[in-house]
Amino acid sequence: MSIPTATAVDTKIRIRGLTKTFTVPGGHVVTALEDFDLDVPQGQFLTLVGPSGCGKTTFLRMLAGLETPSAGTIELNRGTAGRPENSMVFQGDSIFPWMSVWQNAAYGLTVRGVAKADIKDTVGHYLDATGLTKFADTFPHQLSGGMRQRVSIARAFANDPEILLMDEPFSALDEQNKTLLQAELLRIWDETRKTVVFITHSVDEAVTLSDRIMVMSAQPGRAKAFIDVPFDRPRDVLQLRHQPEYGEIVYDIWSQLKEEVDKAKQQADERVVSSKRSLFRR
Ligand SMILES: Nc1ncnc2c1ncn2[C@@H]1O[C@H](COP(=O)(O)OP(=O)(O)OP(=O)(O)O)[C@@H](O)[C@H]1O
Ligand SMILES: [Mg+2]
Image (cartoon, helix red, strand yellow):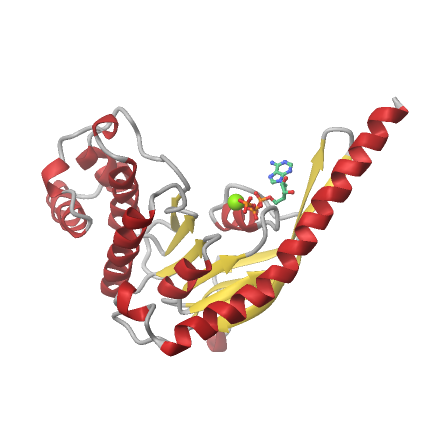
């Protein structure tokens, strides 16, 4: 998958007319995403916000190659040969319980047959960056939820993918752990400047982390609005929240999002009414 035109050279991900439909039991068709266009420049931290069910996870799974589009194209402008296309960090636990912290973080590199000395350097670096060096030999069941999520982040960055896909990685964490991990992610991202596509339900988290935020419409999901986040980097999570423009941007996103959340709620109510009707008809 490559982009042949010179003008698109800085575009890392190019999406055109992307549509995804699912056929659910009973033959009913759900259109999760419809005619969706997006360009993500190389090195951008892009965050998707949108009501539940608008197709955010479906979109990320298609980027990861875990789902096939029903229509449209996804093009990834590949950089260095031999690097993995993507690494995904999911909501909740996605590390292997039978592997130590070190083995988990080294997993992608080991599978690719990277030289042992390079694995040692890279994994050592990211365990350090995520505050896990002391826990290298521990197993996931001996760690807190926040620490397990740190392992996921260390593993994803150590793998050195072309793009990093993160689906609500901090949503299960308490406020303190969330703030700490956001700060760590900001720091590691500054060091690597990877192209990231991140999903969150938290507008604060989106503004804190991103270069650009895409507000998605209620189902079927489309790009409703793009908001650029102008804050300089490196960013300090707490100082950022005291900047006057911070509140303005959060308000702007919330007002765009609220309309879609209301629409999604109405859709859900209508589905309940129609399923009750079909129950009575039986
Ligand atoms: N494998 C599947 N089979 C049938 N329908 C699916 C499947 N995966 C997703 N869907 C439907 O597609 C729509 C989008 O789902 P998706 O999980 O992408 O939403 P989301 O925006 O990630 O929601 P949330 O914010 O709740 O995580 C939903 O209506 C969902 O029920
Ligand atoms: Mg989701």
